[in-house]
Length: 315
Image (cartoon, rainbow, N blue to C red; front, side, top):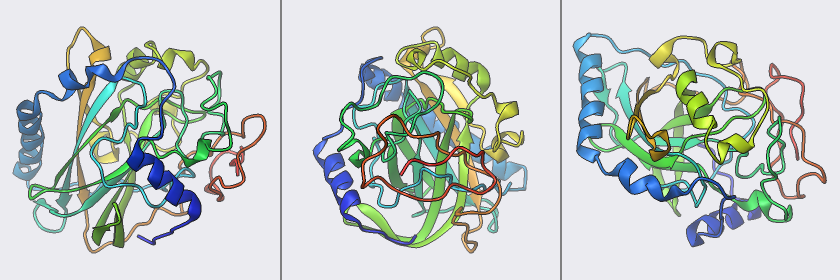
């Protein structure tokens, strides 16, 4: 991973460490204890998934896509990436396997994820309108893009497993609900983030439409109205199921979706390959046009993938 250390990112990192970012109102995040209590059961589920893959005698190399226009360098190594963001709790367990070595776990791999909040906003790009009708992310645009919520790394244990505590993502036009993911190897934790090495895999994780629609009827998601893109109509998801990033989801309580979900997936990678996800095919979704007033001058800049829709990135 190429390291970029700007003043803007230093402010973002400082905000994250000091807990400076506070999410907009809505569903209380207090359901976390119930959502994350059953560690033994979820670990057994993840292990069973890995065993099933190994017993089949084959490993499926995951479909790679572009990183999209909302990526930022310098995410923190941390398990809980919420930074106070409201939403339905999501425990995400990812197992990294080596497709070239009989599905052996890739211990020490750095798994990086980032995704939008309940209303479709990404930290670092909070002045980009998510489409439809959504509340403003921040009334003060001067510091809005210094936030770092819903971004982070975890380092895989001996079983190739990482765990994140986050919230169920919302959506933005014209994309379906998704989480971006990169797998890095060969680097090391430094200054609270992950430095060096290379990116072996760039992809996206997806959610079943029925579950997403159930979640989006709850607060704070319901405050974002408009046209939600289903899986079959998404520009990135290719219908390949788990090999294309579709998560296995289990509710904490079947009759109470607001209590949260547990998501599982196994990522098969080639540790010798390199896939930065910058440019190329696959699309990642273009940020919608900027909100009134525009983004602050130190907001991240960059050109969206050329094959994405024509709306331009805020800068």
